[in-house]
Image (cartoon, rainbow, N blue to C red; front, top):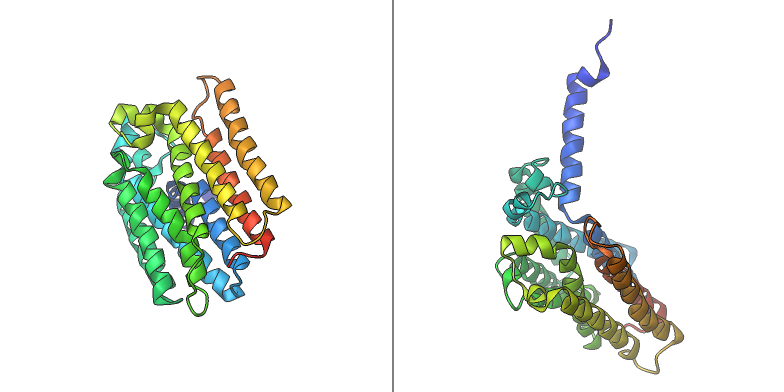
Length: 295
């Protein structure tokens, strides 16, 4: 009788590799990583990058997001294990810490190398955004200024995308300002699903000090402010698309808040407002691209 396929050495190695890759993907915070990378790609196309330029911008932002996500899971592994977060691969032991550490280091190096392939000004913005996000992971996550790294990193994103163009043009002020507001709103939305776990492990960032209700209000208010800034920032009167985006920024997070409340306490993790924030971010970028007047 021939041996079972599952027992073949080559098949075992493939299984281990597949498990490692899956663990790395899950540890990278795939939803925000995909959303922010998609935002960067759309922005790059919107400001007039060539196909090659869009590719470089997208890869730079993806590498930066991988670095931040993996570093976050490494630093939070003990806390995640304490509260039984089986969805966290590092805490659950489904991917090794050394593997994630090496992956994060390689992604950080790739971020710098890719950014430098554009121009020094753009590289400075990209590195600023990365360092700010890493400072959130440690030590600012549990401080009253926990929102600051989100605002800086999100604000640096469009600045990098625009300055990566030939000639390194400076972005209009309303663009990074809107992105900073969007990032601040994303911070409050991002923390909402983890309030209970954070309380058990001693995390006391600004959202925790405001509480769930205050954080939901802050998230929705900041998302609306970001969209209004994007609608009114470019020269000329706001377009119909811009006004529709503002309405969406009001309605979507509000409905998400209501959905989260009606889901009851039995829901696994209240992620509705967080996902609404990601959707509003994508709507905002579509608004920018559709306006045809970014810079």
